[in-house]
Image (cartoon, rainbow, N blue to C red; front, side, top):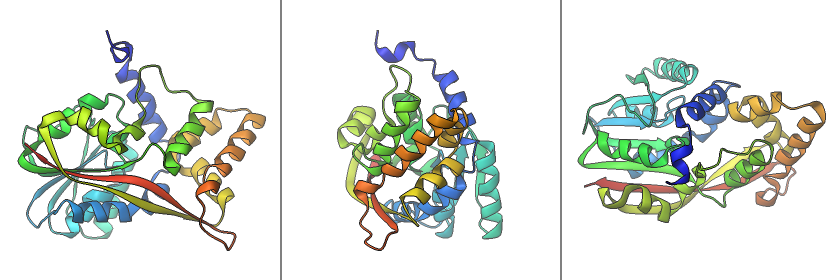
Length: 272
């Protein structure tokens, strides 16, 4: 028996969903739009293709695909994020379909999509093997699977290690940052996907200061918003100090602001 056999993934996903529906994640997620634009280009999305954005949040990759005249669909289990995705699509006059669904049980038939994408989304599914199997299942043979995932040693990896000191993850749950490691992708996808490009990239976190970074994430990044609200005043103050410290070793700005690169892996593969 492996350690994951004892994990209640359904209960964990429900807690995660509540976390993502707390705060106002799109205030953070919208800043990451450039990652989705890059991923859609790297995946070679073309007009008329059927494209799925998994764990889409407020629809960054789905919207990017629709701008290239693909038939774009976004799927997520957080209904408030889907609602904001629909609002964004309407405002930009983009015909994107948003569907409520679980990345580990995608509500689509086999081989439905030419390209299946996820921008720092599916990596947070707790049953990583099941999520990977679902990505493969809904991609047609010869279609593309394209992922942008934070790396273990990135700024975001440091952020989640800090969070874990206040709210440790359940035993048996692998770090989502492992999706940003080539070796883990090989374990998850095996021979089902031929990875044609594994490219280290960076996203620049740009804030007024490290303190502004900490404040923004506490106010808007649902899991941290929910964690912060559960703490007493003194512990919350320590969390704020620790969050403020997270981006400082990465900061490249010399003008008092924050300009900190966050490393991620852009992985493009062909479904065999």
